[in-house]
Structures are given as C-alpha cells and as structure tokens.
Image (tube, protein in one colour):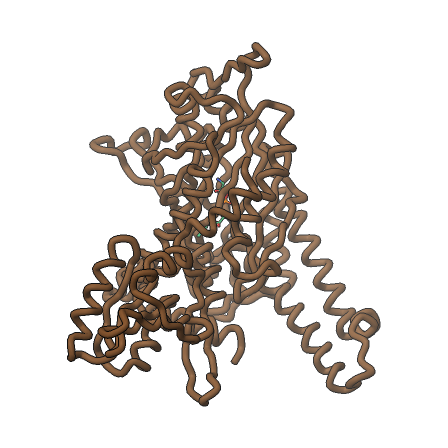
Length: 518
Ligand code: GAP
C-alpha cells in the first residue's frame, strides 16, 4: 500500500472512530475546517495538558494567560499583519478557481522531481546490483535536463518571492506552461496579494472603522498584555507568558487534512529576555522544545531542525522543528528570536511605554523576545499518523491499532467483564468506579472479548482490564497491553498504582524536568 493510501485510510479511521469529523458534514462540509469528536477532544486535551504543564508548571518563570480572539484593529497594523500577511494569488479565468501562485510553481517542481526519481528507478532496474545512484544522477541526460530546469525555475521563484515580484511569478507560470488542474487551460489572471486575515464588523459600526479581525496568531494577545502580567505577577526578566488558543487564517491552499486549516489552535510562549541575551536563550529553547517532542516517543529520527536562511525583518534567528508526516518533513513548530520588534511597535502605535526596569542593571529597556509557537492540530496529526498501524498478526488475523503514547491516548483503560453474568459485571463496575475518578475509562460488556479488544485497539486504549470468574476468588484481573498484546495477572489492590505509573502525563514530564529546566 502506498503512503497516500495509508493516509486516506487514516482519515477514514479518524472519522469512523470519533476523532475528527469534517465540519458541517450534513451540508457537504466546509473546506479546511474540521470538528474534533468524542475521542479527538480527549486526545487534544491531553496534548494541551502535556504542553501547559511542561511550560507553565515546570518553569517557575513562566505563567499562562487566555486573551480574547477579537482585539483592537490597530494591533494588527502594529504587528505588520494588515500590511504584509499576504499570499500571492492567481485565478484561472475558465474554471474561476483561485490558486497560490507559489504553490502552482512548487507543484510543477515536484513533478520534475518525480520525473527524475522515475528515471532513477528505471536505472536501478536496468543495472541491478551494479547501480550507482550518485553517478547516475550526475550523468544521465534525462535527469540532468530535468535538474537544470528545476534549478532554473526554483531560482526564479525564490528571487521573485524575495522581491515580491508578482509579474515575474506570473511569468514563471506562463513560461512553464502550467495549466489549471480543473479546466486544463493556461488562461491566467494577474497575480495579486491576498491578505490571510478574516475580518468582521464590530457591533453597530458598519463602516471601515468597525472592521476587526479574527486573530491570525495568539502571540499578539501576549505582547499587548506584557506589562499587565509583568506588573501584577511581579515577574522578573527573564520570564515567559504562555497561551493556548484558536487562530484563524484564510488559507487558500488548504490540504493534507488537519495540517493546514482555516481555524486552528496554537500553543505559543513568548520569553522576554535582556537585549543581548537572546541568542543564548534561543539556543536553550531550541533544545528544550526538541526534548519535549522527543519525550513523546514517536521516534527521534522523525524530527529535524530547519534553520531559516531568509529571516523576517523583525527576527535575528529562526528555526522550524520539522516532523516527518506521511507526506514528508514539514513544519510542526517555529522558534523565533523576534528582537524587540513587537513590543516596540506596540509602544509606537499605542503611545504607551512597553519598557521594563531591570533592578539588576538599573536600566529600563524594551525586552527582546524568544517565541516558541507550535500548532496543536499539527501535533495531533503527528501523533495520530505515527500511531496508525495496520498489522497482520501471527494467527493471520489483521488489526488496526493506534499506538498513541499512553499519556496522550483518549481512553486510558477499558474495563471488560468476560461475560455478562455470574456477578462479573458488578465486580467490573466496582473496579471501574475506583479508576474513573483519575482516568478516562470505558466499560464494555458487549460481544466476544476478542471483538472488544479490537474496538479498543482501534481507538488506541493502552490497557484492557478483564474481569473473569477467578477475579471473584483471587481478586486479580488480567491486564492486556495494546502494543505487545501480552497479558499479565495483577491484584486489584495494585491496579491503580500500576496504571497511574503507565498512563499519567507525569511520567513524560519527569524526564523533561531533569533534562530541560529553563
Ligand atoms: N506567532 C508565530 C506564528 O504564528 P507560524 O509559523 O505562522 O508562526 C506557528 O505558526 C505554528 O502554527 C506552525 O508551526 C504550525 O504548527 C501552526 N500553523 C500555522 N498555520 C496553520 C494552519 N493553517 N493550520 C494548522 N496549523 C497551523
């Protein structure tokens, strides 16, 4: 099965088992908007908890806030979003479909890559054992022709994007003879800049003055509250403010399930430091954030840093933590050294001082900021796509199992009486009542035990606890491990402690605490 087919299966599975539904499905859905179902919301809450505890609980100098989605419209002028939060768009006059110009070109480049890879595959088949891929790529005329074209188009696109040259972007599309995937024609409009912010009207003001935006990032809610938190919390630099919340972007190319959505959630932290100290903190936060990801146990090789060569005008260092999604390595989190740009801009636009008096140096200054910004939905997708496993078992049976880290799994344990009589359900309820105060548990007595195991595998429940006739005699239960399918007999009296150690987010946090305290 190809990666693409597995990914399709994963999307269908996420819907079938109550993780993620297309939004407004009975009205045929709303593009790039999704709803989290009964399993999805539990898992999302667990990810939030892991992030919040790692940031706010483990670091004495980080506090959290929850700012509103609507903010004063001048904030988005100060931050640069009104002027520069744009995508270059082009319309096909026949299909009336709108595309991001750079994405059309990127798709063209991907096709060239595919062509080169196909040549390599052909070479492999032809030469067998003796095949030398490096040499083949350096000498095969077909590969060289495609590579030269790739370099030329990629170079032109990068330059056009850097210079914001919309005429050149269109010219590349014309020169490469890129056709609309819907109409098949090359009948293109000019390229225009399109702002990604959603706007709406405030209250009873119907003109321009009443236009407000749905925030495109949560960060600005932190910046404008910097002094409120610093003063009321008596915070001393260096300190951080963390926030989890919704953000909205009118993404034109919304693909790959919940990877790029129009309504999504971010978990952001702004860390305020003394000017000049920012590079040292940038390096610390890079390591701390990578450690947070790795502790989830999805595989260390699935992460890599991608340092930005071209920096935004306000940044003096930036990196992405990329994750290997089923469609390749893509950005999961951004870590940015934003200098004092945002606070200075708000100082300028609001006329209020955004300075901090440093009692150690007896100086006032506008602090510098290191930002860590991670997409909650992308983290969800990273975990779900890694966890999704189609397995062939030794007995020839097949199962679909979600190997979600136990601390993140929506349901921690299932309580299953072997049969529906002989006092087993009563005993199972007793055990369920003991566990459910602390853990999200499911009780299930329907169907054979095998079928019930499969249902729990499909939602990623790490442990199944089976109550049988012996339980009534020896007060022991059987605990089945989701991944190994091994079973172990455990006294009911020790069950809570054993389970707690395996499923509590505390265990993830303990490792982090030792390694990465800021
Ligand atoms: N405050 C900085 C900021 O917003 P960003 O790189 O634009 O930076 C940060 O966004 C993170 O938010 C990304 O790394 C990604 O995980 C997530 N994100 C951004 N746009 C998204 C979208 N349309 N859908 C889902 N997640 C998104």
